[in-house]
Image (tube, rainbow, N blue to C red; front, side):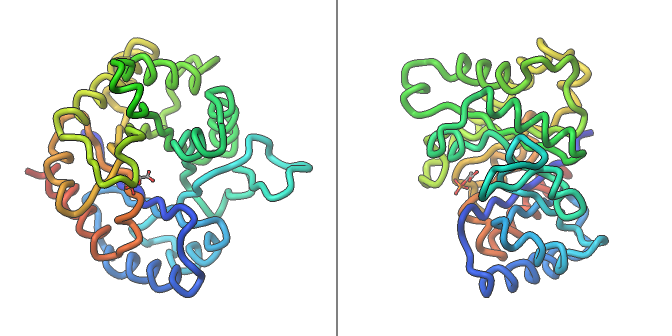
Length: 255
Ligand code: PEP
């Protein structure tokens, strides 16, 4: 039985004055919640505040949106996974904005993934096709390339990894994938992982769907057999919406 996992990626949003009440609302609104694992990913400047607000027994875990692949050094403006130990538990890697806005390659994703694992953080690896790739029937080829690139040189699937299937055309656009299309792609990711690392590792792997998830559309996505939660961008900035998404995901699993 896979425990669903919900991530809230705030991206480069919130002032400190906005972030603090949002963190408190999540902590209080999800007090005692155990229907899914919840990870909030605030901007890096608010990670210390997040750690203060979300004490150890909070149901809300902390993730970081990006890391550099080196543990330390002359990389002005960057933060390493090693530096986040003790503050964050999870680290996002391969997000489409990192790939498409900042030009990160599959090789970069591989290096970052290794650094996250070396530091003992839990990676959330995002993969997904663009609209043009989907339109030309290249979705599975792209997913395979991204997975092969991310896992280059790996002999085993890291046990702590979560994969987020996030079609680029659905991120921040309001155009959510249909539950059937999302299920099909998540099932394809699982079978690619099975081919590479074996059926047992693949069946234990948690795969999130991400792309314009809202409190209104999550239920139909969350009941799909290969979808184990969601990675949420825009709606994670609204605590009521995000908490409703967490509860709907828990509900779907108990249905
Ligand atoms: C994301 O940033 O990973 C994301 C899925 O964003 P949104 O929910 O806004 O589409």
